[in-house]
Amino acid sequence: MNQLDKKSEAWSALFSEPMSDLVKRYTASVFFDKRLWEADITGSLAHAEMLAAQSIISEADHASIQKGMAQIRHEIESGAFEWKLDLEDVHLNIEARLTQLVGDAGKRLHTGRSRNDQVATDVRLWLRSEMDVISGLLAELQRSLLSVAEKNADVILPGFTHLQVAQPVSFGHHMLAYVEMFARDAQRLADVRKRVNQLPLGSAALAGTTYPLDRERVAKTLGMEGVCQNSLDAVSDRDFAIEFTAAASIVMVHISRLSEELIIWMSQNFAFIKIADRFTTGSSIMPQKKNPDVPELARGKTGRVVGHLMGLITLMKGQPLAYNKDNQEDKEPLFDTVDTLKDTLRIFAEMMGGQLQADGSRQGGISVNPEAMERAALKGYATATDLADYLVKKGLPFRDAHEVVAHAVKFASERGMDLSDLPLDTLQSFNKGVEKDVYDVLSLRGSLNARNTLGGTAPAQVKLQIAKHQKRLAV
Image 1 (cartoon, rainbow, N blue to C red):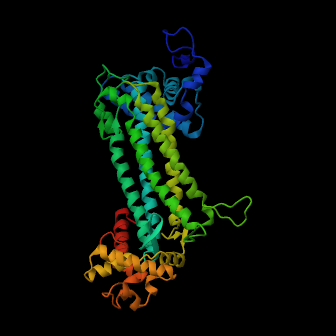
Image 2 (image 1 turned 90 degrees about the vertical axis):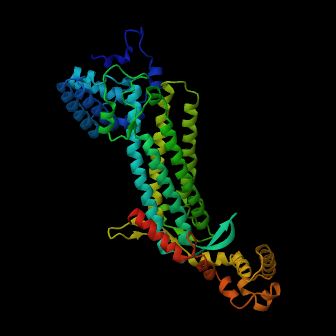
Image 3 (image 1 turned 45 degrees about the vertical axis):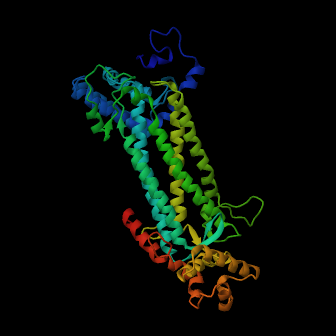
């Protein structure tokens, strides 16, 4: 029996009794951290290559480690690898199997490192890879939203403030607001990735090591952008995981805002959109119901991710330097955040833009009801600001124009009329500067087209923005 297999009996000669089964189960992490196996093997191979280059281990040992790791990789991928609770975590499980396969060479692999810097490296490598996947998913969601925006650049939607009809906007413009949000999310992730992609390995337990390691070589081998400069900090802080989870929380908040709008728009009282049946569910008792479960669940999962952020911050807040066992609790919230975010982005990309077909077209996930949107815009005097702007251009100070329009809206509201329905002489009774051209201003389409400035909602501007984003995303 090798020394690692004896861990279930005692850590070393220092201990006089084995760990209790209760403590073993309480402290073990292997059944959730085994997902780090590929990062663990990758990091170990880079470490072994450096040890051989520095003549700390022999080339024969290095070759044996490579061969053993290849066998372990095959066993894990095929499902034949036996994960042992007695060996506590992914790192000791792989090391024990390596030693079983190649003997003393496997024992020499741990030279110059500790599980403290090993796990910090593995989590960073794993997270870096997952962040690259998430960045791709964010790009795909933006493409889906762009496809909706492009189809609906000319569709009029009532724009809301305080959930009250404010001004008419293009539905495509509304979709582009979320494209901007998710573009910033992608930028945030790219920035976080730089700090994730730093190498702790070689910091050992907390104080560095006496072996002549070449840490920069390992960083280069692993494609990392730098080396953690302080061994105490390198093994003990999880701010990179906190920062990622904060960025993920912001993504989910943006998803939640979109979800809230989809839920409102789909309700019969609005009927602005329909969500494809494959993204909805029915009721067990009410046969007429079609429920927007995907947006509702995403809205709920946002709280879950934000909760993980709070958990990770709380995990770190009271820890003295250096490594503490508390940090084992970083993995489950981090893993769940990644899983939740990836699943949510995938389903929203498909739900919003539809399934991408072989010819590059999309099978729509949502369908728009332009007539219902336009009727809603007409109910809320959405062109009132346009009338005020019209009067300002006629020479009236804006505050006075604001007051004049308020009287006109009150008059129209009491009679169940839109501003555009009021006769010219009635409008002139509020201000003599009003002329026939006022009706161009008071139409929804006229209001929309008038906002033809950078960032505005005019369809011409919306189409320019769509082209800009398509170029950025190489659609």
